[in-house]
Length: 303
Image 1 (tube, rainbow, N blue to C red):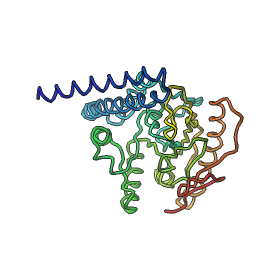
Image 2 (image 1 turned 90 degrees about the vertical axis):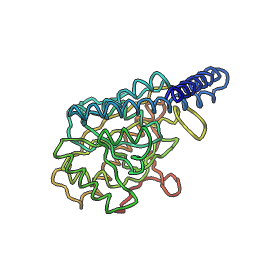
Image 3 (image 1 turned 30 degrees about the vertical axis):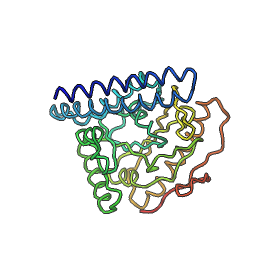
Image 4 (image 1 turned 90 degrees about the horizontal axis):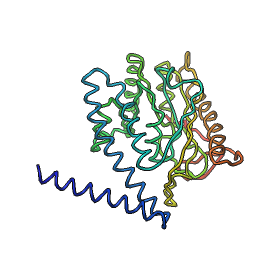
C-alpha cells in the first residue's frame, strides 16, 4: 500500500509540475495555455468525481441522494474557476431554477466544457441522463451511479423507451427534475447554431406532465475551440428562459413542442452570443448532423 501511495504522490507532483510549466510557457507561447488548461481541467474533473462518489454515498445514506449532483456540480464550478479561470454566469431573472420543480431542463450542447456549465447552473433536486456506457467509467461512472443518474441504452430503442417511462414515474413520485441535451451530442460549432433536436426530452416531459425549461449557453468558441487549440480563461453567459408548459399534451404534440422549444432557444442563442462577443446579431443557423453543413433549421423527427 505504501508503494502505491508513493507512486501516486510522484504522479501528482509530476502532473502538477507539468501543468504549471505549460501555464508559465503560455506567457510566451499562447497555445501552451491550451495544454495547461486541458491538464488542469482533467485533474479537476477526476478530483471532483472522487469527491462526488464519496459525497453521493454519504448523502444517499442520509436520505438526501436527490441533491448529490447539485453538491458536486457546485464543487466543480469553484474548482474549475481556480484551475482554468473559466466562469459561467447565470441570468435567471424569474428564479426559474429555484422555483420550477419538477421540470425537464434542456440546453444546447457545445463541448466537454458543458460539464462546467452544469456546475454553474444545475438546480437542486435534479439529475442528468447519460448513455449506459458511461456507468462503467472509473470515477465519473461511479459518481453518476451513486448520485442517481438515469442511464439510457441508445443502442436499444425498446430499452430507451422503458427508461423514459421509468424516468417519468420518478419525476412524478420524487418531484425530481432532469437535465437533458436534446441535440444528443456536442456540436463543436464556432458560430451560434443548434443541431437537430432528438425528441426523448420532450416525450419525457409530456409523459411526466411537467414543463420544459430551456437553458441557453452563449457560443463560447472564443474560450474553447479544440480545432484551433484555443482554451483561455473567460466568462460565459447562460440565460434561463420561461418554462414551456406540457399540461394536456400527448405524444402527438411532441414534434410541435420540440420545434417550438428549438426556435426559442436558437433565437436566444444568436442574441446571447452576439451580446457576449460585442458583435452585431448574426442570422440564425443550424447544423446538419450528418454532413456538418450549416442550414436554416432542423429537427430530428425519427422515433
